Length: 179
Image (cartoon, rainbow, N blue to C red):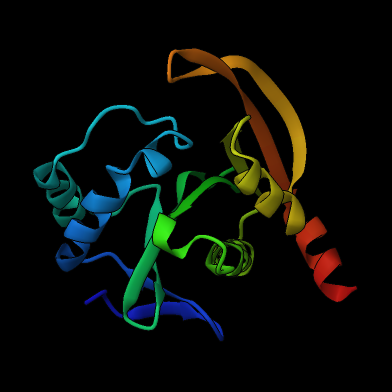
């Protein structure tokens, strides 16, 4: 069972990642549907995942399990939190069994709100491989703006792909929430 609820809304809860979640994480990130768009072609063992979960102490990242009640459906997090500039990189994935449910959008919105209102971030950034249309749509739908492109940055399935860079400022987030 996932850890305690850290954040929640009507449909999703964001929970701490616990040792009991390792099998779910291992199965999900081993799926080509997950690792291809995350440009992570290196296989990860269950032991590596357990070691990461069990030894993950205070750092410049925050990682939470996305759940529907007590059922895990995905993972999201902030990495590379730069406290001086107030910038963090968001990443996320939803298990293919739960695609098309809205969990991703709701979880990312909830987490971005947390980043701006609780962590005091000034900006959240994201990097998306150019063929990941679903992820690009999700970011744009909640207000992220394309800020740039790294040409042929990622290598997946024998081909180079561009990496699209997105950003969202706290002021933009607050303005769109007021309107």
